[in-house]
Amino acid sequence: MHTPRALTIAGSDSGGGAGIQADIKTFQELGVFGMTALTAVTAQNTRDVTGIYELPEEAVARQIDAVAEDIGVDAAKTGMIASVSIMEVVAAKVKEHRIHGLVIDPVMIAKSGVPLLEEPARKALQEILLPLARIITPNLHEAEAIVGRELDTEEKRKDAARHMADLGAEAVIIKGGHVEDDQATDLLFDGSRFYTFTAPRFHTPHTHGTGCTFSAALTASLAKGKPLLETVETAKQFITEAIQHPLHIGGGHGPTNHWAYRSSRT
Ligand SMILES: Nc1ncnc2c1ncn2[C@@H]1O[C@H](COP(=O)(O)OP(=O)(O)O)[C@@H](O)[C@H]1O
Ligand SMILES: Cc1ncc(COP(=O)(O)O)c(N)n1
Image (cartoon, rainbow, N blue to C red; front, side, top):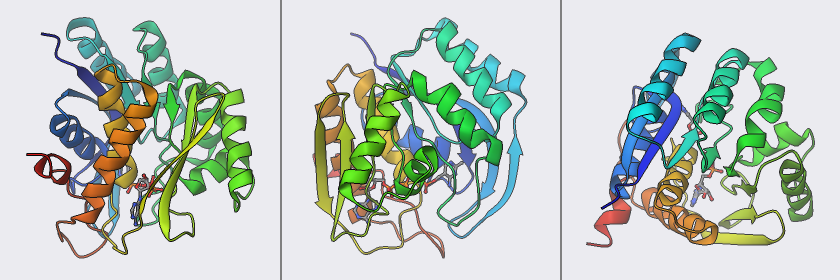
């Protein structure tokens, strides 16, 4: 039996709701063996980020080598990659180990408002990481930062998705969490057609780690060899249930509930 294996290349969230921690919880819940390459350690809780400690490039490279050379990687995702030098190392290792099925979550700012990406790295993200993406998953603000204009209509968001596909991403999902709408609608462009994935919008402050969890769920399905539309459908269900049943942990933006999807099916 083949055990699907997924790697997350991202930052650690000591609070357990976002970053590497959200990713491996999600991999586990979806029946995928999770592996990690840490890019940074954050001191973080539901209220604030009180410290960011980047890892040396060498440490990031060695972690990716270690898992790719022995265990193997069916799909991978990137999350917080704060600097251009770490981005370059990650891109080089993804190419060297021929890691396909790469989901890029272009993390820029934590829900608490603290920047997680240095300014020069914004442009580098487009040039270095985006062309390697099987799927890139910007939220509204990240999509606006990548294309450099406001995306206040669906037409403009479609143009932005085409733009990101032209830059090299195989598929683009502009997430709808920050779009003013009664529903949470994510827009997928697969390089030729548009699809929307819609769920009810829950009025809750507990959205810490939604983007990480969603992109990890996409990665888990890709690791299982699922086709694109089924992959997005599963990830949307996973994040919707995780937001719908919050855990009420911490005094700020609490985490989502990574158990909810599997609990509802057993
Ligand atoms: N309040 C909400 N109710 C339901 N779904 C939401 C809500 N907020 C975000 N989502 C969904 O969670 C996923 C992550 O979206 P988003 O919050 O835009 O990303 P990020 O965490 O990167 O800012 C998307 O599928 C989005 O539609
Ligand atoms: C280490 C780390 N990585 C990513 C996020 C983004 O979290 P969100 O999904 O809430 O935007 C975060 N807060 N911390």
